[in-house]
Image 1: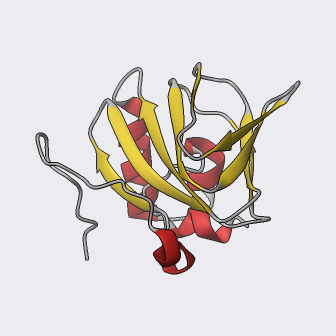
Image 2: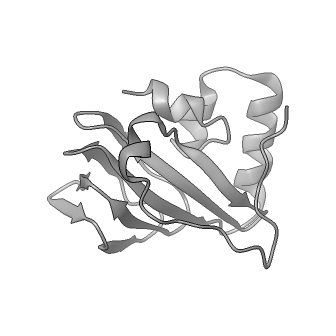
Image 3: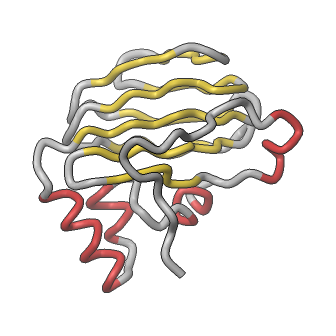
Length: 145
């Protein structure tokens, strides 16, 4: 079954999930050749290991608290806070509390999305190694813990 993505011009609610956060899973919101948005759910104590993506990213903490690990520092994000990273910057994400974050990724070209589609089609661990934690198979994100 295909993952449903929001269409251009469609309004998407990103309100805090509150008590529903405990049952929530990471989910793709929308993606195109040049842009992807994901509601990233990070459980307290869960860590998405250090990785980098080619294009710039933003993380907006919708609820909870999480730590963004950078090569020489850490940034703690709490509800309502937003951060921008340049493409290629290694980073990890760790939940201090159960958290949900809006992740946006800007692709410099459509090549990464084409690679992501190939990996999905043929499977394998390359989706974590080559494309990063934002691979379209969002169950991979949950399994990284």
